[in-house]
Image (cartoon, rainbow, N blue to C red; front, side, top):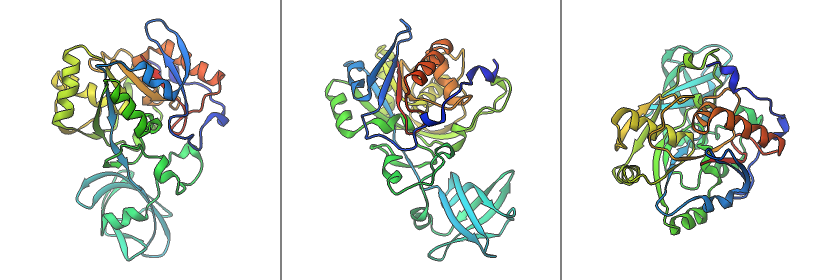
Length: 335
């Protein structure tokens, strides 16, 4: 399939640079059976959740991945952490005037530093002298399309209210809309609210460069599913109760488990599953998602779930109705 099929034209003023208060965004409900598109408020999502449903969240926490420092020679350097490889060891990107070499250091305030251990293609592997203190100095890694620096408010708003496990360098944005009060109301309705973890990498938001979708190489992301969570989700699946995935990240975890094990299995591993048109969904029965960048793997996943024609029609409708797009934008519920 040609990647160009997932292109669309978005007026720049529809890119949401700041979030609305949680729960107040718009919600476009896409019904796969009828083809209907319904305009609601996000707080109305509770009316689309039924007793017995399982709402699955991604409880990853976004880290302060943008670290500003200087090389030992004095030049400015920005370290962007990508993935934790082990205690104090990270893969990263380093932006500086000249490429760094093994053994060179980036120095931060407080006599802290990152030492280059490996030069790996376009990236690096560094060891951090004190990861906790260094990360406290970092900035939230806002997507570049926001075209602004992270502000103090982003420490709270670019994080779900249920975030628990450090490791993401981008937010699982579908979950940004929920408040704890909303989740409590959903639980009281007889819906099981269950967390899994997938640490989101920057590759999630990159456009597909290959002319054909099938030629794209997907990045890998680390996930973890606890025993209790796996049991609840698997019981719902076997009993044909609906599993509602909050975001593409949750969808990827659950469908990866089904592809590998044929069931929802607990454990920790990584996945590079690439979901696009023709994918046989085995776990997810409904999906909440934001509006994604053109030609992104996220949009391709949404089209695979909702159907290409209907999903792209929903995007056209959202643009016509002036929905807010991308990370801080409005949401879409595909049922």
